[in-house]
Amino acid sequence: MAEKSFVREVVRGIIKDNPVFVLVLGLCPTLAVTTSFANGLGMSFAFAFVLLGSNFFVSLIRKIIPSGVRIPIFLLIICTFVTMVDMLLEAYLPPMYEALGIFVPLIVVNCIVIGRAEAYANRNSVIFSIADAIGISIGYLLVLLLIGSIRELFGTGKIQFVMLMVKGGVPGFYPIGEVSIPIAPATVMITPAGAFFTIATLMLLIKIIGDRKRMMQLKKEGVEL
Image 1 (cartoon, rainbow, N blue to C red):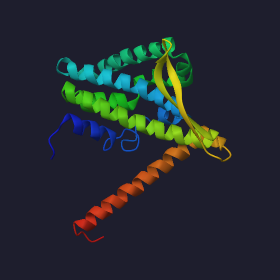
Image 2 (image 1 turned 90 degrees about the vertical axis):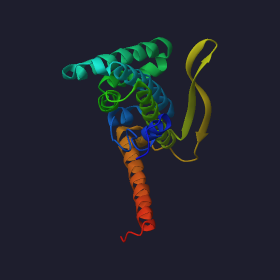
Image 3 (image 1 turned 135 degrees about the vertical axis):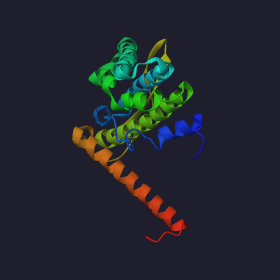
């Protein structure tokens, strides 16, 4: 078994333990907020802030947390960071705060964040818990951007790429480019039905690719199928 390292833990969180496509967790916010690239990016930043903070503090105090009350303590830590990011969005990024709505406060009960606190940060050192949070956050970011881009492109006919920047002393998600397609928009893609269709299609493609890789590996090892 390969020795654990910071980089390996980050990569594992992105690929092997991808929170949506592999662990199949956090589907509610994933489906709800990915109506556009911008919303996916905003949710990813809020999620990463909470996960990094909670993983860090859970790992830091894990040896002094009584096992019988560990879950309530995890929730208190997570609530602290969710409150912080919610207030920051409301104060400095009102449009994104309105777009994400209730799903930022609901990060408190996001099973990905609670699961990483219980399954990983509570059992590993601070440095590896940070690596886990970074990997999971990047994996979640890639999923939200992919689904958001697909839904926005086919639902509106274009993707408005944005990035968090400060212009004139005002922070915000400012446009950095746009891609459009010469077809009639299918508005169903930005509805709940479009969200389910998109994520189901992507999961099917990932399963097909994974099955083909496993079959190729078995053939190389001389296993008869």
